[in-house]
Length: 360
Image (cartoon, rainbow, N blue to C red; front, side):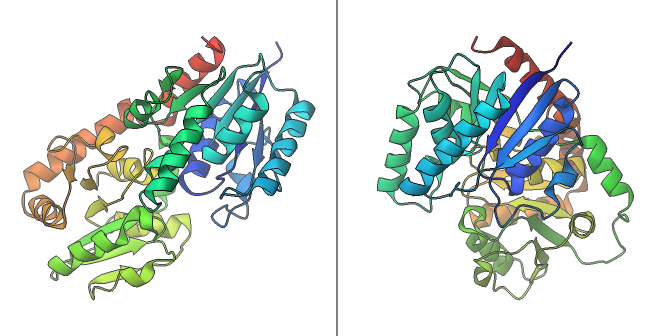
């Protein structure tokens, strides 16, 4: 029996979305033939094809731009239409806001099943002005007047989608446990370093809230803080007890995480962060900001702690540092949640059910 063909259109081919797409495609490549229409970003790995199984095809969309640029956007629109004509897919799945807009214009009134995953709506991005956020909300609203089904990556994002359209489903993000286990097997366990380390991982950007991370560090001068990553806002991390690793390879990033004690994610907005799920699986107690994505996964006091202010983060970190019973309880529950819910096998099964039902 011939496999159905799925075309993924992915403008934001980097960071968490890259990992998400790679994991989902690899899980489903036994059942579908995949073509990925992508745009290169600074965060796209140079050897990105090596992250995928050999039967996955790639086509670059050369005119994709992150910001609104009408001329480039029009050229990108014709590019993805031509790619779809060449591939002749049975199913099209759009990933990220730009792909979602252009793809719904290109394919929104076709008879083939069309899906869109925002991976964090642009109108929720607090670094933008109120006017710009309202514009993005309006664009998303206008784009719902077609047959496309939006598949959110968390329950919180799904609730935002329901403000726009009833043609909505959600499938929680998940991590590839088997792959992560293999990577962790070549990483040594926590070192005998006696210092207590609080860490986060990702790009040092407005979304990840380095200002709050720095404020927490300033209030805890007896604790070491570690930011695994780099970015344009690294000057906001000026507390003497913060170390920035810069961009490191996957093995080194996991080694740094393994040697740390508490994971914090003070983000201003998220979809459903892969870094959080990986920390949960690694049995690192997690302290996160009270936003969509974070509080969809962390049930405060059960499998981690949700906070609003720097003082709340400090109190939570101290409780996890000194209350071993509470820390272990949170870690075990978080680990169990990943095993049972937030993994790529569960995610892939749910996507397959949606794909097979088409527009239903």
